[in-house]
Length: 246
Ligand SMILES: Nc1ncnc2c1ncn2[C@@H]1O[C@H](COP(=O)(O)OP(=O)(O)O)[C@@H](O)[C@H]1O
Ligand SMILES: [Mg+2]
Image (tube, rainbow, N blue to C red):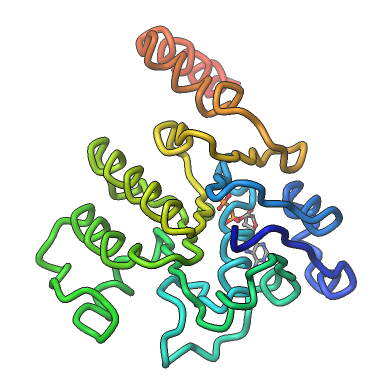
């Protein structure tokens, strides 16, 4: 395990009151968060704070919050994100990894532009990912970058991936873990979160809590939807119609 705990200085965070308005981030600031497995998922509705937390961990680890690999020579001089500026990382072997900043941060929103920019640069992939589909480009990047033990942070990596490509990503996760690396991943994917023996944190109005895959709201929604899409939609659309007449 590279990263075992994150915590925050409440005093420093107070300058940014909006952080306290996100229940999961509020709880993290007050209680910290412990990582006990080499793979951890953050799951929750849009706006629940997943990216805020993953970006802050990336920054504190020395990775660009916009995505990219660690240890690059042209590390940006952008100001840190408000949570990144006050987050403290703990781990027995963390200092070794921090020194070399071994790892990669894949942020779905900005990944493709960034990946095109660094294609062909030393330490990156040689393939021209602009000649590939979005998903193929992602997988190329992940396969090239996931080859050494390090901290791998991913923000919704499934966005560009097909079902089969998600399965490929699962095997890459296994490779990282076997090599002694660690994965922290924000996701909406019921497939990725089913990775055996992972820790799953669910972010919602109640804060951030560890849950089993079976108990995830996301899994429950997908299960009910796949069981009977037409009933699901009939209910959804009739409710929407009623709301429209209000
Ligand atoms: N700089 C900021 N100032 C105020 N609110 C912000 C800022 N950045 C993010 N937020 C808010 O924080 C909430 C959580 O965002 P985010 O972490 O991106 O959610 P998620 O990744 O779970 O969808 C959102 O409601 C967003 O509008
Ligand atoms: Mg997000």
